Image (tube, rainbow, N blue to C red; front, side):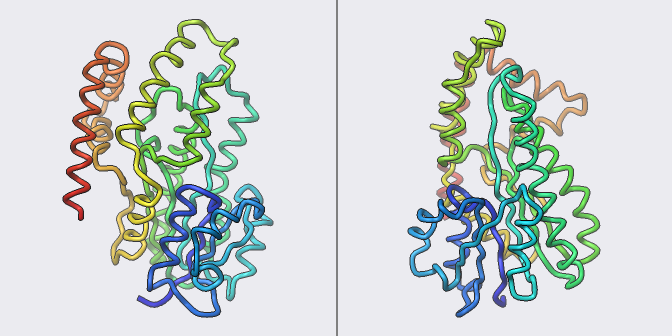
Length: 314
């Protein structure tokens, strides 16, 4: 495999940082005097953590540049600055989170989330896809989410943005195939990052004054403890996601969808098992509101399966 230039967005922390560094350390992405991995972020003042973990790959196989996924001019300037505007692999990772009762979310905040999570992806693809089609080569890798397949309580708007991402990519992938351009949706479950921790910290301090008492109770007493249990039991590390992303990029025939956490596959399979949509809704409802002990036991079983899966993959 020859050297390819990869552009990764959202690299100031978390998955984006881990992916950029992992690719920069891979032999097939190294090249002297020319960046192979272009790690981008909206605010270059936040580059120090990436510089620290990049080590000796910095300015050798990894270069840091400014890119704001919410600004077409910023994206164009970044791509124009690359030799021949060549982006062989785009890893669209930049995103924001939002959890909590719908009544607590302002329209401006919801629109801002879509501007990053969905329209940010659209802007990036609009900029790089024409060149990929012209070269009849390229790979667009999109950090989606399990919540782009199955909605989750109190994640209404975030899940909606990921559903939009999935529909956009699924529609575009057919056209891309005609030009030998590959598309892959990476679908993590919970990942232990600063991004995730900040979202949940904000949720615990959320002002619920405008919400009815029952909804507020469900959010504080059921959803937040439930989420903590899930994260403590099933969260992956950014490095695990980065390793799997590397395997997808280097695969001869990468899949269109890839769930990073195998233990979630039975949950997402519920959606396809019942065309009426009742099965997953009833299952999650009963686990949350009627069978809490079963939910806790299920987490223990899933954790055991996750450990076995990890051992079998080594």
